[in-house]
Amino acid sequence: MKNVIFKKTLFSLLLLLSFIGFSQSLPLSKDVKISVLTCGLGNETYSYFGHTGIRVSDPGNNFDVVYNYGTFDFRTPNFVMKFAKGDLQYFATVHSYSDFLNEYTYEKRSIHEQELLIPLDLKQKLFDKLNAVLASEERYYTYKFIDKNCTSMVVDVINNALNHNVIIKKEDTDKTYRSILFPYFDGHFYEQLGTSIIFGTKVDQMGTKIFLPFELKNSLAKTTFQNHPLAKESQTLLSFEKETPRSLWNNIYTYLFILGFVVLAQNKIVDKIYIFILSLIGIFFVAIGFYSYHHELEMNYNVLLFSPLLLILIVFSLLKNKRWTYRFAVLHLLFLLIYTLFLINKAHFFIVLPMIITSGFVLARFAIRNKKRIPIII
Image 1 (tube, helix red, strand yellow):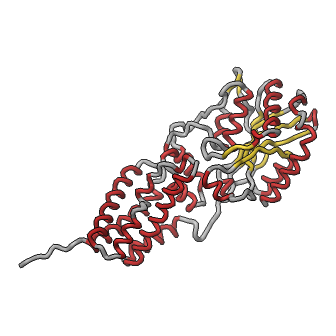
Image 2 (tube, rainbow, N blue to C red):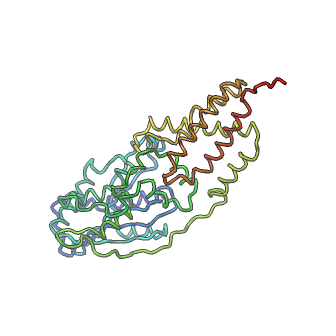
Image 3 (tube, rainbow, N blue to C red):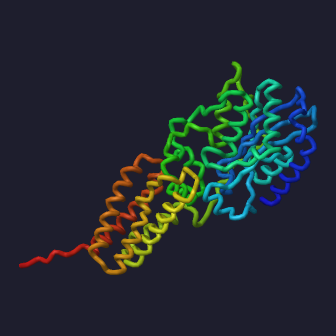
């Protein structure tokens, strides 16, 4: 499906090259309409949060196209490593509105349209800027989850055309980015858990920037420009109810079952495997924090739960060094207490709580098994 979309995008881009080369001097007709398109949520990882595009429809010049800042190529060499590192290049594209509509019809995702109520000269300026970007190296940008994505780039290009930061966030500025993101993972439990524990302190900052499509949609509805609304009321071009996926394994029940088994098994091997897995996750978090350019992954306090030092506890346990096994178990129980107190007002507290409880039981068992017994003389 993605290859088909990519080919359609490439075809549409080639089709439009006939006017893009001189588009900065191509006058728009008085009937031109420029609007922001907000696309509904999907069940693929790249579509969890929706999408934003800019539609330029000009009957006078006989074209209707959508500009898109959210394109990436799966065929990029070392795609996964580049994405993880944070230097994957996204790029701007343009394709026909009919292809855009067909794609979202196929994916059963809604499209909402908000026409911008700006003068013709500013429409011309925005149109020229969009085409200038496509014709230059500006079309490439380094994706950043919060700071640079398909939505924030649209906000920037429109504000630039209006010569002012007209579009600013109008709601949820008193919520953290983490709290804002949390509901978007409905039906994707392990993705919700994974993002909860891999993100660091940046997503606990107040969400003052527009970075999600529906944030832009809601802010546009409340934004004024030159003493009138910046955009018309939203019109629904496509309407689909989001289908929440059901999975036999990707749900909270398998999560609780696995953790419950670890707690109830009271088995030394099971305990060691559990602690070993936590330590490997912690090592990954530390490594990715240093390796990646994604600021969202830095300063990850979740390593108090997924501590790389747990690996040392396992080593001492295998060497049957009771003294140091006990000390490291107690140390990590202290880490767990600090982590719980720090996490208690965070959005992901309840999703991580079962793992905190399980770790507490396992570490306590390590401590009890290796505590030096005091002989009693009668």
